[in-house]
Image (tube, rainbow, N blue to C red):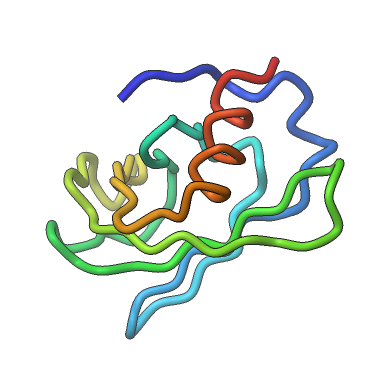
Length: 106
């Protein structure tokens, strides 16, 4: 994956990450958006290949868009937290364009 940290994370609303058993509302400072996925820090471990849905919203747009993907890595421990890497699947062209613009924004 490639991408950059968001320039002014305070401007972004929280990101919602949800699986069948877990729902997380993460601050924008805890995530890194990539052109084909997302990485985030959390206190909860996730199984690799778990399907999840992420709800993203930018400060420039009022409507959030959902991305479905799978967890491809979950590294860390319960004391320091976990870094979860997720790759999105079946993105529409519009969602891919929005994700790419977020990944490369400063």
